[in-house]
Length: 111
Image (tube, rainbow, N blue to C red; front, side, top):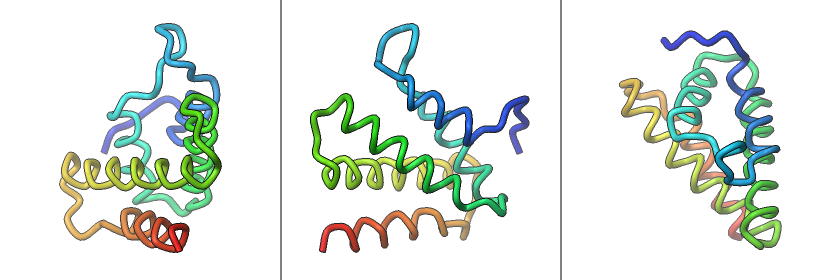
């Protein structure tokens, strides 16, 4: 498992809050999402997943001219992708709870 000197979910959430796609404040890299989701698999704090989803939704509203529902759907699709990528990257076979959560949430939101 990758070790970090900072709290991965909080770091990612803060980076999303200040990101404006400039070199000084870039959008988080795919590896940052992978690391956070990898940590979430082994964490007892599932509330961080909601915070990440909310921060990503707010980012898309701020930078994508999307309404709340469209931004939330985009955030869930992206997090589902990052979760699947994390599974493959860290070889977490059978550890697809986060992906299922996002897919179920997306389906409920779409209805």
